[in-house]
Image (cartoon, rainbow, N blue to C red):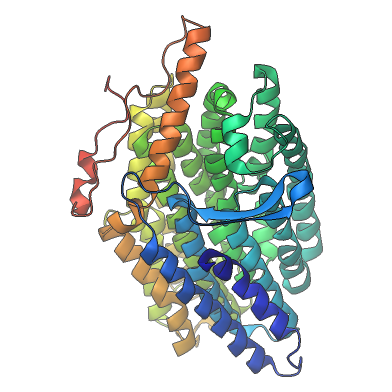
Length: 535
């Protein structure tokens, strides 16, 4: 019941908050912070109790009870290492978001209830092992997020909200049709494990099923060219909404590829893999170039998400142990680094009530602690060695280079240009905002970090350093899940080559095994063996 408690504790807190008096915003803030902090505390038991040793159960903390038994639908939840990491990211970020949202003064009760409901939906999405249950949590995320942007957003919030809802909802309906079709061809069960092992459909049907899942996940990532809802949603959302959107919601798309689209339809995944990898690289470069021309800080950080999530998708498509592990790690990195950037941009906005880069300049002496934090987070975002961003990007590019897909070396080189462009646009942003001469009198008397804001940003800085210098505790839980996915894709590759003897192998031929034992030092990352005997 531990995982179920973590899933529904925020929802229980939201129900209790509904009965608290609306005229006491301080009471609501304190209660929401307590509930999210308690959820994080309980989730630490998941982290402590997870067994990542070889031979451990694939899904741990599992609970399976009938829900709509006549239709083959059950309440089935459990965690593998990747889901565990994303659940921990969710429970760690939410109390920080609550603390950062202390400045919300309108409809505080409803705002905090929406955040609590959203936390339950996000955790449930990562934990679900029944396809209908997954879809319920997946769609439930839209409601509180719709409210956060539509009610507490900026001037063009309604346009951004409707665009966000239409993009994500329409794509998800296609996935629902595919879920029903897959379950009917897997013995009538919606259980993920049953469908994964029992699904038998023709090659054409598998292609359409994969595309239905992939489109829904690509919109959520978001991948180029279905990314256009993201800059608008980020720009108009309140700071808390932007942090949750960047920190957790976008990972639902990349997680969907890792958990559902690729394992359920491996043959089709291999066939569409080159196209997805190319789109990932296009997204990396396109997002970085768009950042160079933005005049709004928040919109710049939003486009940087398109670029960074392109790296994640490139790592997933590499289908090497290094690439997949780097993709998983980059999901966490993006949640921490980009979430911290949105928090800092929000702090500046609260002081100047503008996000235009041209309205700033030379404020480092006025707000030295904000400037210091911004620089540290920027260095993480551009992948400086010693920060969390370097570990993820290095593994992704190395894994892509070692992949067997045609043109992987070229994709790795093109992807690396995104790292260079990332350094350009982020360091240029820092220069324009914090250095130079002060051009506006309003910038001469800005207050620096308050105590509350210090407590908001400090955990993010700590995570950036710890994940950069000691990545092993975060890499180890993902290793078994990565190995299982590579093995499954190898089996699909062999099947395809049996049907087409002239087809060259596109996945490494040996069982992947990351050489990262608990005693391994961070410097040993470079010594990881390639996932494939021919390398």
